[in-house]
Length: 476
Image (cartoon, rainbow, N blue to C red; front, top):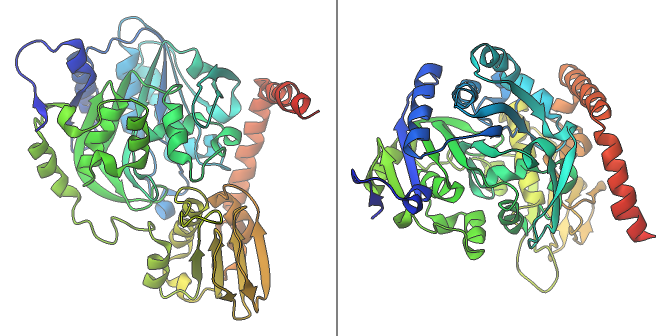
């Protein structure tokens, strides 16, 4: 059973493994500010100097179509920023994020309502609060010495911050089982390094990133929880704000609320293997409005049932059958001589891509879509395409294909949802967002502004210098 708090003063070790949980049904800024202040006092978090704050913004655009559950809610972010800004000793707060590959972060900020929220924040803040896009700013190189990354280039504002605060959104995830504070580190990588080993070594990569992204304080948005695919989740009410100073402890509690044990979450298991602790719910002090594992399990009933919606777009074949689609999915190992399939690369991109299509075109569009076959990995049996198109997704995709109208290969590792949207979204016989004039105008506009900012900030020149000194000379 998880340890309970007594009335005695918590020692430093207990604080590290304490998760402080408060009930909160709505995104009321004043109430959130009071709860966050209480959590900071209880967990003895006293930020000083420059504070870097990172929310969770996977994707945001036209919330009436795609929903508003793929990101930390703006009122939650605003309340956190204002509360932190009024802490004695805090001189400046910088909030930054890098959203899904291929989408300018500033477009997601705008769609999520972050820029509007910042106008309210600045009126109440006790120190300067700035928002920036990690994909537009200069980076510092830091040594990690990990399995995937020796060095990593992260935002200069983050690298030079005196303290880091994470604001994850508790959600299900189509390959990692859940999104929490540890998984949030994928967003500290810009697109060039984010794609490195975002394949069968993704969980090792996430464990590496803890060296660069270990927050001193976590405030998890678990008021409304996202279930299903992490980019287009459905809403379920949980009514909690979860705080801690150890990202693993917070995620272990989050996993329990989602019906998972710590060992069920692959990136947590990878972190445990590196020596990170705690490694189980029994090692965590549960404090606040909930006091025990039994309390967590009782609260978790609000997220039930664990039905098809809860696991939406976590199994491609199942979802295609649900919508009576003529499209097929063939999935094999990522290399010869092994039966291992890559669970975290192109297949994740396909789940997000098709989940996007369902949100935009509707489930009914899948039934009338063109017959087509998606292939990931080395599929051993011959595939009869029946005169229709075949899409080979990823560098490892191989198959003996017969009677195909056309074979389209996306030779990337990994192939993202953005790659699929741009390359094949218009070929499926369904409405595609890449043919939507409003979206294209918004995308071009945001990309142009992002490019101008990268020019002004010298980010382009920094990247060119990195290529010349670190890559080109090595090749020569």
